[in-house]
Amino acid sequence: MKPDFKHEKVYIYGKHALVEALTSAPGSVKKVFLAQHDLEIENLATKHKISVQIKLDPAFSRTERDAVHQGVIGLISIENIVQTYDEFIKNLKIGPDTCIAVLGELQDPHNVGAVIRSAAAMGLAGILIPERNQAPVTGAVVKVSAGMAFRIPLVSIGNVNLALRDLKDRGFWTYGLDGEAKLSINDEKFDSPTVFILGNESKGIRQKTMDLCDFPLSIPMHPRCESMNVASSSSIAFYAWSVRHPKALNLPAVSSNLKKEGK
Image (cartoon, rainbow, N blue to C red; front, side, top):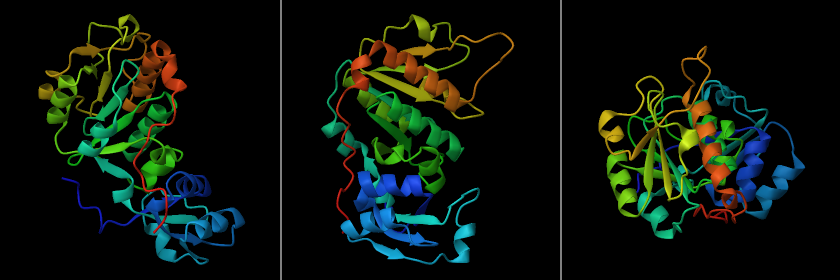
């Protein structure tokens, strides 16, 4: 069942993020707010019959913490950004060059946005996001992702472990990033469809989830550094996978199932 996002208002901030949304997924944009005229944005909005308001309400400065809107704001429909697992897996072409990331209850929206950006850059096929105990997709997430939230499938899952079991049944090998793991990421060939599980910033991966991992993986580091945050470690893991799968960087863009036309 798809989560009910219809009553959730999410705003994205800044010209780059909004232009990306209007270009890659205009159906997700419900309204545009500008502090002053911007011909590029107005033309894109007009093309897709999206309303533009040339005035910013002072309340926008308090819409989301740490948001810097630069005089450009878009009202986004989350239901047109995040898809169900059933929709995603039905359309996914699974092969050796397929890689998915599963977020294991990340709490910092900046980390979520950074993971999305790295995953898109390294050719991953999608990001699985739990519905509970997880930082949701917000304007801050989209902004940190540099608009990549509109280019890579974002997939809502009700339960991480159930999703992992289904992926394993479909031939995926699952890897949990764990600084204490004996297997180094440098020694893994990644010659099967791959899933990376990324743990919570403070608690790491839940034990029941780690028990489902085929291989816990560590990233070699200089002894002066005890650990890296989830955004940094995930980008290294995605790169290590992409080195062994250069075709993934040249594959056609993965369909995100976003609505292309505004309504």
